[in-house]
Image: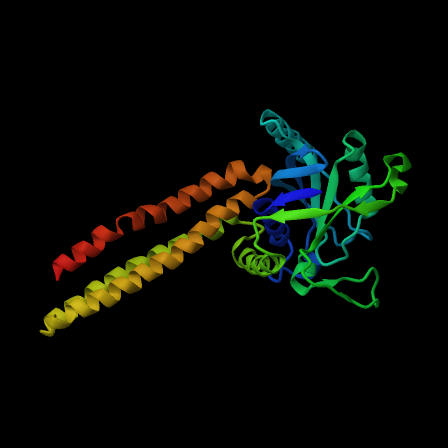
Length: 315
């Protein structure tokens, strides 16, 4: 059995949906590829972590969709494998997405799995399709075939080749799995569907630092506007001789400001979480930029109590 922790599963979902979602034209959806790090215990493969490595390059002129690993991707795979080995772990399997089409092993998928399973017989391949999870239907093999209704399906299957001796003509079978970290399969489906919405709305496939900088700058402006607006309102009440209203207004405005900060905090935490779902080769350049951007917000709100106290004393 393959045992997958919640975080590793969500990594597959996030990285896949980032390049194939309702904000992107379906013709522009891209496959995403990654690996699992873990260990073997008895007959079970215990996954520890999941790493996105690469996404398919769009080629609308291609008759058959293909994806090729670049030299950089191969180096990335080696770096991940070496890092895992230093922890007493190793690359136990791979995963990739089939955005919007049937979960199966294509000719290319079999070729890739054959290479790895020949060296490691317990190696496996997970194939994920977010539409399957969202709609709970099995997509047809060919146009015109009916949809098959599913129930409590996590949107993926795990495969292993029957025999590497058959080469690229090898057939394959499904492997049992367990996803840890959810109370039930119902909870897994419901929470993951909501997670897909968050990824769709807030984890862009390009311009990641620029997107989050625009968000943070906008929130800082809103924060400053709320404080300034509160001070101006209290000043107006003072000038009108309505000082008795100040405690009530200050309480209401303080609650509004704190609510705004709390709501923004959730989004900031989302951004921090999303950094774990970047492709491995992106992390060195993107994460420091995003951390610098988020630091501006952290600095601003760290003095919130002091600012509100000063405002209260002023009036």
